[in-house]
Length: 116
Image (tube, rainbow, N blue to C red; front, side):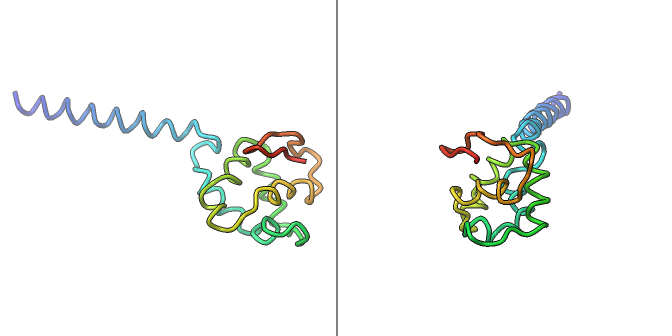
């Protein structure tokens, strides 16, 4: 009788973990966390701190990819990784425009800021 109870307990734990893991898949950036996605924007570090800094092609490419899902781009700009890296959100939100991205999410609200 003890073995079936252990099995049921283990099965219950696995179900709980799979449900919790599934919650991550429904996040702003899909299966990846905003902090993980923020690492992909490393080429944007200087441009996210200084509005007068040049924006590199590699930065614009990453912003273009991420900007296809504005909620992810916003979550990345507001992430702990971005904050620790010294990102100024009021400067970071100007990067899509500075990259001259035609399909940028103009007017998207992000943490009290609106993307230009």
